[in-house]
Amino acid sequence: MVVEALQADPDYRALGPEDREVLDWAALLHDVAKPLCLQPDLSCPGHARKGSQMARQLLYERDFEWRRREAVCQLIRYHMVPYRLVDAPDWQRQILAMGLNARCDLLAILARADARGRSCRDQAQLLDQIELFAQLAAENPPRFADDHSRVTYFRRGGDPERVVFHQPRCRVTVMSGLPGAGKDHWITRNGQGLPVVSLDGLREELDVSPAGDQGQVIQAARQQAREFLRAGRDFIWNATNLSAQLRQRTLDLCYDYAADVRLVYVEAPLAEIERRNQARPRPVPAGVVERMLRRWELPDQCEAHELIQSL
Image (cartoon, rainbow, N blue to C red; front, side, top):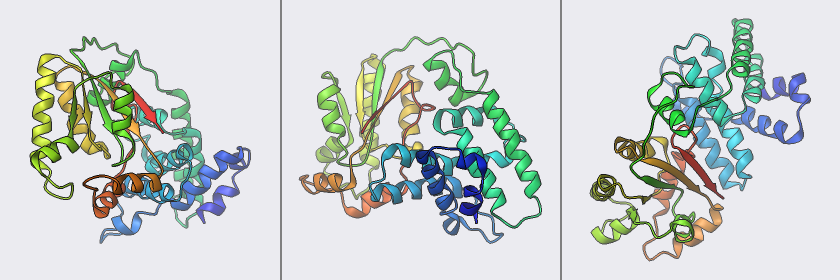
């Protein structure tokens, strides 16, 4: 019903074929996580974020081109926002985050199709909310004084155009990517000989399996990182860092020491990752990789001063 409503929308029909394809997939998959998130009262809290992760895994496993895949996933991630943004106390923050990560014009088209493709009494109200969202998005493009002001705004709030003074003590490069995606190769080519806090290296040193308890490994990595941060020395943190929640722990540590942070995301096709993983002396178990795929979220510009995507 949502796909049919989408394809009947004149704004959808006026788009180019690539944008229409992105919307088709977003409409098809936007509620894919509802069965997993269903509660006894029939609500589905968190289904948008979980749905974006499920869509990412589904499309990645089918070799979907990454830019179109991420466009689909971001629309799914934010597809509930237009219905309630106007009344949200943090509406400006949400608008600016979406402006950095998604096409708000496509999001409005998807939301209209979602509202029209259902049987409900409040359809007219939903469509009014979506129209207000589209106006707010057009009137509030993401503008920040500089990279540090952008990072500070998404961490602490305040005025998005305020200049925040920053005198960095060092720069930390935080890697992100699946096992075998090519993080070590990127470091070899671009790391400039910087010291590396490597979780894989610490696992070897501490004789901890990738499938085992990682607490000791994380503790050792954070201790190494603190030593570099206290000394004001640039370094690289090399780990999978696949979810925003996991990255946040590392980023919080870096920001506590007034570091500049560069996030580097590395990706390779699934077949190549599987081949590289099996060639390792200690392959990451398939079950561990599967769990990583289920919580996989790409880094975005809300998280760090600089974002590099190596694909």
